[in-house]
Image (cartoon, rainbow, N blue to C red; front, side, top):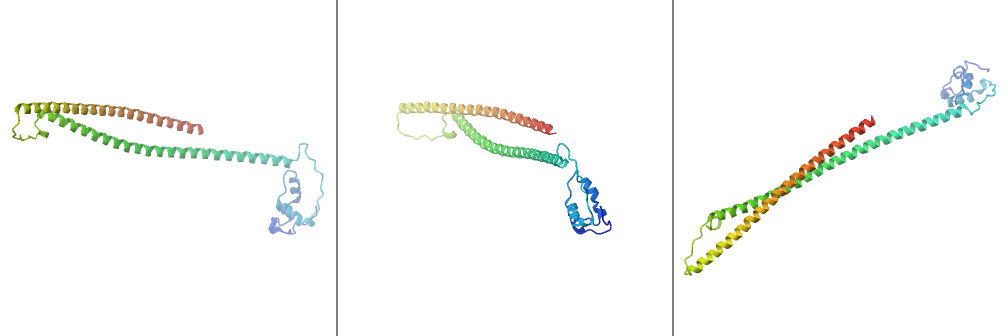
Length: 236
């Protein structure tokens, strides 16, 4: 190679090589057997070809193909592996995020459903309570009437009206009225007692159902917690 090492190369502000000493063409040609030439090296050599003369020697190629092609295959395989790894990581992150979001929405919906159920049950309990109070009032009135023994409505005395009526006929009428009143009062008391018993049994059944449902909800929450713990341990 014949060149002036102190001469400034053409296009140094573009390719970055100021002198031939910086370019070092022999070393570049030796390395070109195992790698591609860089664009700035090619540009510097083409712009300053008048400074040197290169004697090209035949290169003995390997039997299985060029090293450059083998290097490109390795790079392609590595990039594919890296891309697949990133895609798998992104899919795993998305799966975890969707699982967390779905569980959060489910828990929120369950809380809202529990609030609605509590409000509706409170409404039912208040309505049932009013029914019980009304039945107790009817029962108390029936008991009071039975204890007062024909003393009038709510204990008020009825002023007798003096009329010329046959005493025998009047006695029969009063006796019939008394029997009918006693029969009706007994029927009302029996209906009230049956209604109170039915309400009490219904309340017991509701309490048993509520306890069973509470136990089921607790078991479900514990099972979901165990599943989440197993998933976290498997990810780790």
